[in-house]
Image (cartoon, rainbow, N blue to C red; front, side, top):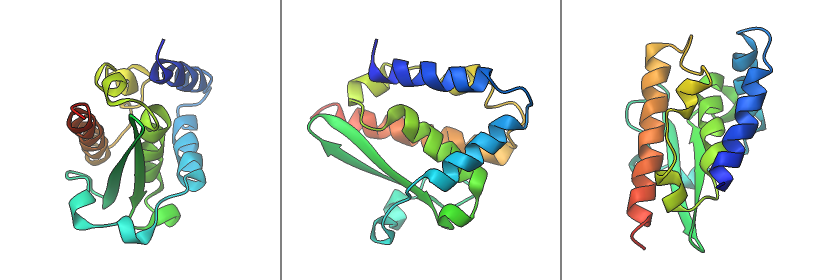
Length: 144
């Protein structure tokens, strides 16, 4: 079992424990507020995730065979909380993993835990773009 599989199992258990459908949004807002963000100097145009309504930045860092991501939105911890929370959740799953493990993971996991239910089309598109960018970086760094 990969580290990603273990993290997905933990996140799935959290989502299964929600009693109220609004609990997942509260969870994402908590993740957003807890997320450390990133240094302003990293927020360059080339790192903007295309397709997000909110300006989201995703910066890869490859160290010792593992991919680390720095992510933040233009408003940081102030706004937009759901978009930033979605990014923080993705990093909770993928950060510090090998490119191969990322590429071997089915991104449908997020739909399987019901994250797509109630997500606005704009946010769903932005989240799909973020996942696509993570997988693209994994492909690029898998050849190193």
